[in-house]
Amino acid sequence: MLSAEENERLTRVGPRTPMGALFRRYWVPFAMSEELSAADGPPIRVRLLGEDLVAFRDSGGAVGLVDAFCPHRRAPMFFGRNEEQGLRCVYHGWKFDRAGTCVDMPSEPPDSLFKTKVRIGSYPTWEGGRMLWAYLGPPELQPPPPDYEFLRAPETHRFLAKSYEECNFLQAVEGGLDTAHISFLHNISIKNKNRPRTADSAPRLEIERTAYGFRYAGIRQFEDRQYVRTNHYLMPAQQSRGHVIGSDGKPAPIGTIHGHIWVPIDDTHTYAYSWMYAYDPAQALPPEFVREYESYAGRGPEALLPGYRPKRNRSNDYLIDRTLQKNDSFTGILGINTQDFAIQEGMGPICDRTREHLGTTDRAVIAARQLLLEAVTAAENGEPVPGADPATHRRVRAVDNYIPKDAAWQVELEDDMVAKF
Image (cartoon, rainbow, N blue to C red; front, top):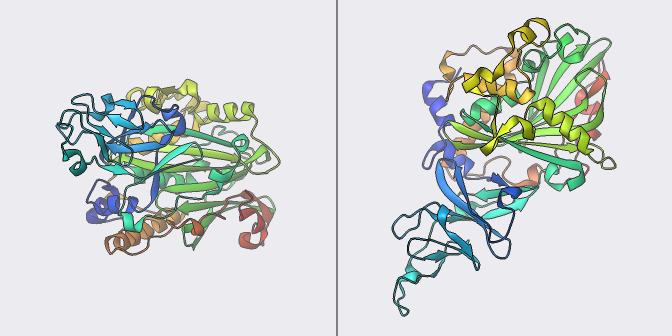
């Protein structure tokens, strides 16, 4: 368990908080590219790490991320006119470019130099993988943009989704790192015992620290083989896992690699960016496969309300079906994503970790907390933080597969764990 002080240290993400300072040392996604689809199009509201901001795509197609309020009289910039390479406040016409420079101040005399003394808060942005990223940290410590393999995968091989979650980011991260729960929470066929993820419900975990965080294997004994699912925890809040073997224990129709980046909106709300890409460079992701998987996950277009909010949510108990739970599904809740949200949001806005009792299959959760506590201290001291340098993570890939009973996964799966894009 964590102490109350450690829990506060790990979960509060706003300005001038220890965890907030750590997140600000990384590039973090704040929107999907399609949310700002056109140059000079409508701006969007952004709440990121407890800060209220506005994003816009300027006349040249570049993305700006600025303070939500004009520095003149604090009028909301969301209502601004996005025109001629800048965002103009509709209250008095002050206009700012994406770097935060005031480029026009029509309410002041033409010879006034006042506009040279006023700026709006702004942050650097970068666009990659159909995602818009921002760096909110000290300029002198800004790392290069990320270089994860899913960002380099061709558009034909990659898919991206987004979901809104009503809880602290750490509950979502820990859910992603917990490999034991898939034997229970995601068991949609309780009568079928002949599957690797349910036949052995107590996986052995082996964890190895890395420059980007850690990698680990969940090892399950299945018949005369080992079923190994490798995972990567990439700082500060990303998880990657292999999906070459289907939930039925047979090779998946399309070998894919999946992951999530959990981005704190504030202390008690999170956006989950879920990505997937085809494992084989020669095999694109068929649209029908994506539609089927996203429907299975419970985050397809038909499952979402405006703002990426799930239709099955806490207000309606995730539409749990007790008859389905009794006869077939372990939870009675449809959708892998929905099942996760039911548990993670059900813990409360910020989980009280002082009341936990952790077991052997919680080793990855424990390791992540230790790593985050160490990284928070490093950020406070202005020291390097793990995983911010793209050189540490660009060759990382996850996989799951069967290996011989007495073989070492580090050897058997070595080639499969190297990025191919």
